[in-house]
Image (cartoon, rainbow, N blue to C red; front, top):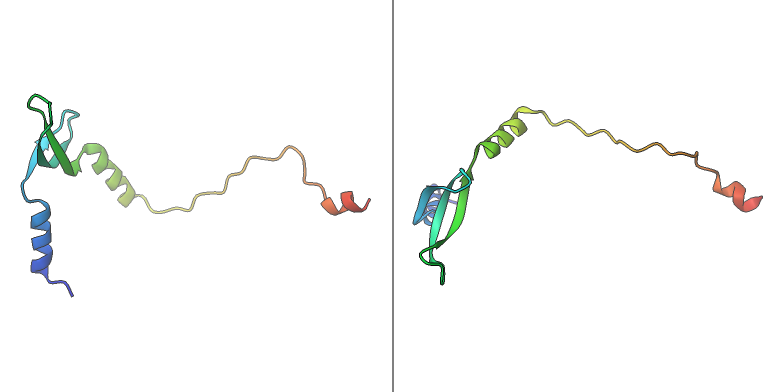
Length: 91
């Protein structure tokens, strides 16, 4: 059995050193800085831990709100009816 304190410790360690940032695309993310890019003139590497966007929020809301419906089996109609292969072999 996993204790709550050990789970929280793992989560805390995962987000250690993380920052909330706005990306150039307009989305908000929780990122971890990985240091300078070699020869990048001050640019930095980062690792995205969680992305927050309206598109992602909308997708999850639609998925939760819409009931699961089975998809219909749609097949294109055949141009010729299937012939009986036995009549071709015996006749």
